[in-house]
Image (cartoon, rainbow, N blue to C red; front, top):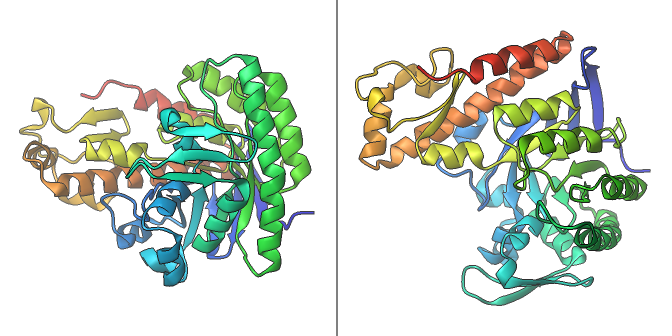
Length: 378
């Protein structure tokens, strides 16, 4: 039986939401938790001090990108990804499967693995389930993901089944490779991934395979890949209900309040997305009444904060007018401040969600938050 790394602290009486504690090699993580994405061993536009100041206990980085640049030789020589980027808290690394999936003209998938061309220099590479485990072991990831096949929204059932067959095959091989690494002293945890596209029978089959593999945690893949919002909600709820209650659940690639709160309501413990920092760099910011663009002319003489209720240092020290000026003049500081605010906003949202769960009031909290969040920004 897999090592127990997760404990449920409280289950909300009003829905499936729960709070918990995840025990990992670089410290405990309180859940639910949003994880900032640091694709290239950095969360874009933020320092490690910024991330620690906000309160993040775990961040995400990307196996595909780090494998290509700077390469495992460099990170291995540094001792670990943690030492390389000077981050002493937890790191989850994805398998690189989604990045390969997003470059269809450069890759070929077989049962053996995936052969692809680098988006950097066109060189050919091959990733197998075993090699992906090896790479993430060199990175010393606290949580590593199995190599999987992510499939498009709208594909037919035959194609979805073929992708799932490969993912299932790769899971068994990844599990064996991870077991061997653990026997040699590696302490990171492997998460299997539920796939199956948008077919209930395939999702059910995938969940059964993942449960049988008995990895320390489970991820729900293949969501937020272009499907309508109501389809996302339907398949999130359906898949979550198939999973064992005692293991941590992770939904990949969600980073807006609506999606995060939906996930928490279904008992999801972990989620990540590039959205808050990517939109921050493009001058879009979160507020409790929705998002807005800093570049809008209406902000030119607005000397109030991004969000009057936000306690982050950006809202305490800088005005909308100033941030608009930075954006219009293409100053790097705009990306830094907007990204900081957006990550603080989501971290704060999850903290309030945890408090609501502890008081058996998450359903009311979600309803109240979203009723304001969807209001038109004045």
